[in-house]
Image 1 (cartoon, rainbow, N blue to C red):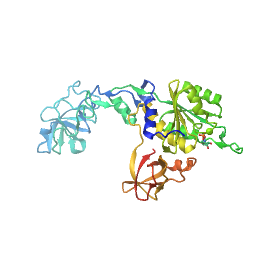
Image 2 (image 1 turned 30 degrees about the horizontal axis):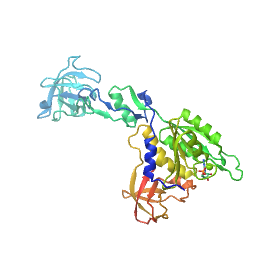
Image 3 (image 1 turned 180 degrees about the horizontal axis):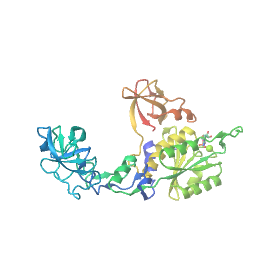
Image 4 (image 1 turned 30 degrees about the vertical axis):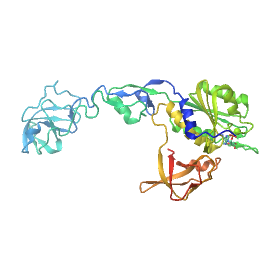
Length: 405
Ligand code: AMP
Ligand code: MG
């Protein structure tokens, strides 16, 4: 058995070899959820001009001293109208009827909301009931964004609010990182799927749906490449076919120490690949390599191992390829309830845990059976507790936890 590689070394090796596809320009309407490829600076002020936040009366704040005061009504400005173009101006003792979003007329420096003023029946004058300061209910030009401001950095995931901001500065198309296409392939003579009767020795393929789901969660386009038998030629054909249409590939199974573990054999032959034994449990074996320049993650076959390996190796690498800045899951300190046992074996263990927040503090307890074939505990887990080599973590002690989702 070869030497075990520390986790961070293996992660580093993988990350350094993964390069994402070039960026593309898409209409704003198609950009939600994608990663911005270049930073964006404001080419306009937002708002573009000083305007009123309220329906009411634009006036000079100085004229409201000693309110109630009565001012001459000299015009009306509604949203979308340029007061200069229609000759509306506020002189001393004047007021202008104004609607939310309308530009402040020249001469006015404050707005009194309609509820605090009363126009005469003939509309000639308005009586203002309150004294207001300069700038009252006025939104200054550039109060949200000024020309030249950095709006968003490259690597920003575009959520609905980001799309609104980009539209507000006149951006119609954005440079984004293309959504990654990632293929998923299961390997193993024993695998079947769906509601078929299982012959002795057969099991159903659990890894492919789980890995496809993890990819969907990541925002990638998950490509189902089916399953292949433990057959060198079949595995090679599936890998060659997969890398031709994908930016990256995940396989599961066939990378352990067994006699029929052909994935690592094939990858070794057709790719620039490294087979690693990582000092972690679960998910010790990992075959990683480039086939035609496309990263291929040869994940272990045990269902929990394949998911944990995805978390530790594929997820950060795929996020980097997709242009994200932060690659890792959030890590928190948590108190262990009931203890998390293990034996010393030179590896870091990742225990599936259920996470709860009690009085603002994280608490974790085992999510169930910790065997690498026991997928139900992975399904209900919302974290992986990091157990350093040793005898485990006792009830009430602190542990570091990687939060899943
Ligand atoms: P392997 O790495 O191919 O030796 O597989 C290790 C274990 O994982 C074996 O018990 C396999 O039957 C199981 N396994 C491999 N692939 C899958 C899969 N897609 N779904 C469920 N179990 C699997
Ligand atoms: Mg197998």
